Length: 94
Image (cartoon, rainbow, N blue to C red; front, side):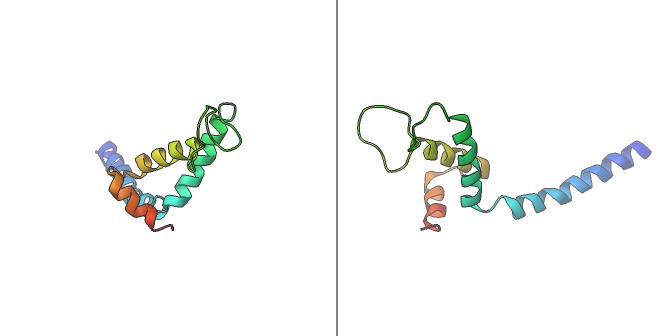
């Protein structure tokens, strides 16, 4: 009986904390993007040049390779499945 009560108490605390975490910390796309971009730059420090691109011949893009990777990871972390939904959310930051 006591074991079931403890499990129910832990479960109720987790269910109460989950919406707070979701609504309080995981709503700002730009903040999450900047944090993931910093982590990506640390991991790819020796693979990318000063502009954030993997060295290769050709035209230098406006959006760096490391930023594309960070944006993809950010959209996956936020649960954004469609590109159109992502572009709608990105248009809010113009």
